[in-house]
Image: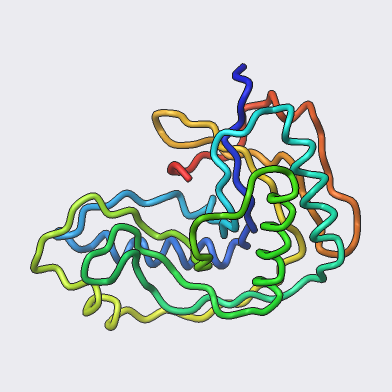
Length: 210
């Protein structure tokens, strides 16, 4: 067992959204001029902050700080939007499904940032752009126009209710990372679930590296 845990803060998504991710990935995989890796759809999540390697003895402090900041935030609804890419559709490194503007999501993000800062982890150095990862591009032929492909794709807009935030561990393996919840923060004013025994248990879901 190492003395650090690869950690991030995220919102899980329901099965219908995972199925939409799967459908969009299958559509992208049809194009031979695009080489990419595709995270397993069942493990799709919305990352609020990636922390990287955190010492185990600091996890409880992070949990306490986040809990105190998000305790008063009520549940809210999120909506999927259009497909985009970082840094751009013409030169994509990551292809994603966007999340619509929602004041409560930004409030939650700000609360998480404040909690992590008070726990000694500072503020994130990236602008928050809520999205669900569809693909990580490895290579692309110059003639491939992702913007034109996306303009022809038809897909529904989905909504789902968000009722909790999760502090997640990510253990790297050759076939992908293993994700496991370390703490859950209900957005109802209730107490989080936190079990120290989970910190040494490396099981559950597999996904591409966070």
